Amino acid sequence: MEKEKEGILLESGTNEIEIMKFTIQGEFYGINVAKVKEIMMSEKVKAMPHAHPAVEGIFKPRDLLITVIDLGYYLTNDYLEHKSRDLFIVTNFNKMTVAFRVQSIEGISRISWKDIQKPDKTLTHGEEGVATGIAQCAGELVTILDFEKIVAEIAPETSIQISEVEQMGDRPICNNPLVIAEDSILLQKMIDDALLRAGFTDVTNFSNGQDAWDYLKGLSHDPSLYDKVNLVITDIEMPEMDGHRLTKLVKDDPRLKHLPVVIFSSLIDDQMRIKGEQLGADEQLTKPEIGNLVHVIDRLLERFEKGRLAGLY
Figure 1 (tube, rainbow, N blue to C red):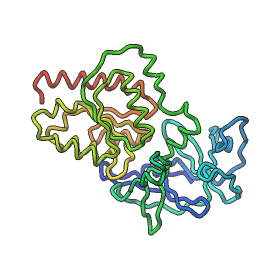
Figure 2: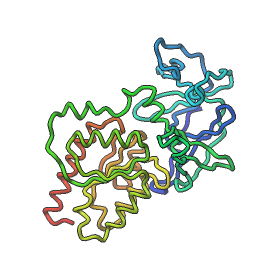
Figure 3: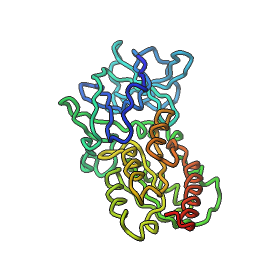
């Protein structure tokens, strides 16, 4: 059954998410509906030699070759029995189509990002786990999985590549202050490393949109606002406050609205692009495009500086 995105997308900037709940070994997990392309009954899969242990293989529905990840193996490090009633969640993010084998689909819940909590770091020995957050949906505790991290671990070449920046050669040092809202520790470090290599020396990170908004709102009446932040980069999926809500709040503020906002997310598609445009985002990029992000930052900072020197704000 193919998902009709037009009927399921939420109103822009409401800070809500729709979670599709599914089960593996009786445990409830969740995925952002915006990542789901369709749900299919599981099919025969062709194994691939020398693949990652969690990669079940490939199949080809409707002339599209799709990689299948055995999510049960990835989560438990154990091969679970494949059953005829298993399902494939076919996803689309980071300009990739990947299927994940699950055991059942339990429905869709609409919740606020404020109701999604990050797992305690002590549970993962201080390291980032595979959960974007924990939410209560229809009375059940649901672990919302970080599918970008899963794919990045299985196929690192699909994630952010600092080599894209290194190919630019030596660049001038840029001291313009940037603010980044990104909840993934892994991706935050990748972005920071890439931006530092590109010459950006003043980067302030926040692990969710709420913390970024609290910081920016605190500066909105500061006479030196534009000395402290010149550009905002935000993910979309984040606990407490998502990037669309953050973009809306920034662009609705009389002074903050002059700051360029770049949405840097795995979810950018035609529908999401429309939402971002409605909220006033200056640019929207898919996450692996770190080289493109650097060029966009250069261009938006130049535009911001020209407006500032012209006394437009």
